[in-house]
Image (cartoon, rainbow over all chains, first blue to last red; front, top):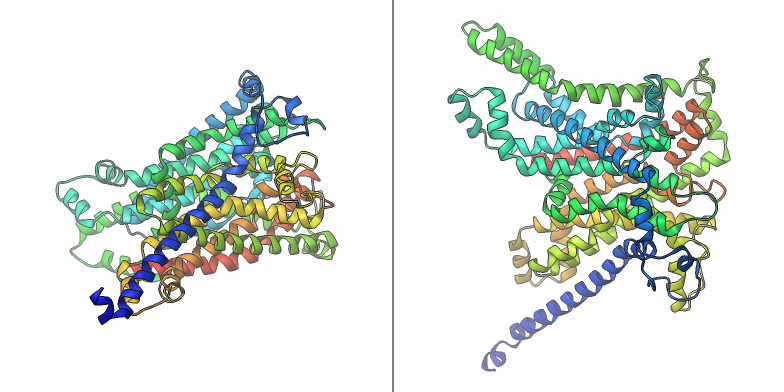
Amino acid sequence: MATTLVVPGIFHRAGSLRKERRWALITAYVSLIFAAIIMLAPPFYMLITSLKTSAEVADLAGNPWIVRNPTFDNYWALLTSPMFMGFFWNSIKVTVLVVSLTMVISVLAAFALARMRFWGSQFLATGVFLTYLVPDTLLFIPLYQIVGSLGLLDSTWSLVLVYPTLTVPFCTWIMIGYFASIPKELDEAALIDGASWTQMLTRIFIPVALPGIIAATIFAFTVSWAAFVYPTAFITRPDEMPLTIGVVSQLIRGDTFAWGQLMAGALLAALPPVIVYAFLMDYYIAGLTAGATKG
Amino acid sequence: MADGTTIMQASARAPGSTTLQRFARRRSTIAFLMTLPLIAVIGGLVVWPAAYAIYLSTLNRRMTTFIGLENFLILLDSETFRLVIWQSCFFAVTAVILKALIGFWLAHMLHHLPTKGQRKWRGMLLVPWVIPPALSTLGWWWMFEPSYSSINWVLAIFAVPSVPWLGEPWWARISVIIVNVWYGAPFFMIMYLAALKSVPEQLYEAAAIDGATSWQRLRYITLPMMRNIISITVLFSLIVTFANYDIVRVLTNGGPRDLTHVFASYAFQVGILSGNIPRGAAVSLFMFPILAFIAFFVLRGVTRRNREEA
């Protein structure tokens, strides 16, 4: 109390700071709760719809946001449908191939670009970044012609061929960043011990940059799983479709939409990236922010 | 680049450096071999198709004769295409501004929380970015569905008249923007949160001692420190949003009356669905100058940032 009398200004300020901070916290929680409701409403509503029977979906009376008689029929129908499982299998096949290809290409190239200066390496690194900025919607028409002339239209192999354009530039770019942050002393020590370039890559760079490799792998996986433009353009045969275009084009039939089944299909298709995200969130976010904060 | 070559040649010609010379040669050969797959992907699947697109766009519909810039002129002459240009720019600019503002706000709010709680909230708020957009847009499509719209049901609670989401051109445009903002705002949030965390705490302490208000702290510390990442993120998102296809395709497919087409969906309709490949290529090439212009600034921002950090 005595101090208040001596310097009332400072004490008053401290009190208002604490109050300010409390208000800031309340505002923060209110905005975040509001944002979380908006952000999670669509997936939540998809889940609710997917648990309804067609009759309940069509019933206009009552709250659409709750489900009265939950049923797994929609999921069961999809999981036993050979067409839907075919989409799943195509997606898995394409994604696994593209991710492995991407990681081999980009780790090798990033190692060379980060550590071995050679003629045009700077130019190539810039080129990698610029290619990352080229959107798929700019290239799908010429690629349609090219894929067509190779006889790969209506085949999942066309996707294996073109998806690297979506994944390789970014993965190389962030791997260059991760490799460049490894101290030079480490490879000097390895060179003195007589390590070859291959040994340096497999014994030092890959283990040390493992978090980066995981982040890049997750990125490549998410992108090839979610890719939409290329499969929409190249593939019209249902048995060669991956999940994204399969769900969008094949589960919508005629005028009567089987909404419950459509939502169940969309959720099942979205499940793998969501699971990866749930378990590897930190790597996922590291990969996301690496593009601008690393390299 | 030119400097690099001359130096390399000079060192190669210098006497008494045979082992070094061999080493350098071997090293650059290995490096070249290691980058060869990357060069093949970039050259064969990006540069070559891009050049091929330019060639395609100068052909007639049957791709038999060269017609110069005819495709571009026809497009510029058509009312529909002029609307596509307008709609693409309107969509991209509005959506990016909203995403940046919402992302900044959410990042700021998250930053206020104690570190322990941040993870949980961040995890929840990033969910829209994780779901493949073509699939989450299906969910939105269902929420916008005219007779069953669950959004209108919620609005009705607050006595708001029901909205014809995808039926009216303007509402359809707004719907596309809403979905894009919903999908992209979490990305901005994550980027800005990372940037906020990198601002040194001492700056805020110094500002507090000087008696700065929270607005002044934002204006004179946070924004200048984050300027680079804000511009990179905005420009990058501008490219991606401008070239967006998934959302328009699933939500409106260009309708009502071709009024919500953006470049990508219109190129798809003209090039693949109507089978006029050259004109479709011309439509997507219209994106190129704008994208190149933005890409130039992104690259400048990134190199400047690297120089600052070095």
